[in-house]
Length: 434
Image (cartoon, one colour):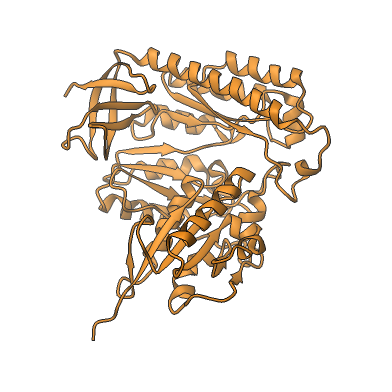
């Protein structure tokens, strides 16, 4: 007698690390019992992997949960991840939620859901970080273009605005050999690019006595992987050793995302960041010296408690002078339980929005300037498999979105192009040169 498989769908919110973990969780569901379906279709079970980095992230999580409950009222709704770890009761109060799993429990989602049925009241398994030293290896699969590979988890930093240490625990990692084994599995799938992810990847090695540069030195030896992209690295952990390796190795892409958060040393102190703006500037200049056309991005938080007009102008002036390619701008978000949430001198939301708009405009200007610097140059582009409006897109090594007329032969492949101009959406146009 043939067993009827239950249809399960997965939906991810938040960072690249979450996508890697969702993919790993989905692979743990036995194929003889479950059929994976897209999240936009009807399923018997929906697993929603959540983010809680800002109040906006929390709101998007609640919206997603309610959307799937409305989409399939009879389906089992399982909510997992950071938001589930930090606010399990808040999630459980949403009518229609059946199961809440925290940071550690989410990797056993298949076991929890094996014989799980719709509940009159939700079950919660989010009772603190029960295994703070445990590392759950993860990588994303299913996207034939690139894979997100988790190399580190947790964070030992105590930034005054951040809930990630409470949601994910202390910094930890696997040994290098185990990560190389994971990269080998990715290579076997024909994937060309690996994006290195984690909560604080530059902190890699605390568990094993290694370093992030040592890990990258071994990863580039894995056969079949042509490109490694570093997702984000703290300025105080962006070492000269790593920059030397990146400048010497064609496999490590010339793209660095370096969180700044504020260009005011006074505000950085209130944030409890581990660097000054001079150190940030030194790291950006070091990248530019070794890799003049590297893509360099930065995170910036506006409206932190106590940020005066003078502090913001200091930040704006500093960023305007830096040779950056783009900015990711965030309004300060009060996270319950963090020191920043109870700080005085709150910046009005209207002022936060005004400051945010100015920095976004600065980011647009810097991105256009960076693109113009690349016009006429040759670059290797990894093209996506998605066709949109008759066009195909891809990213250069230095993280410029590039667009060309659709050609199925380009999808999933790396080709050398000459960058020819900038289209109205801010992407670069190109022609194939090989």
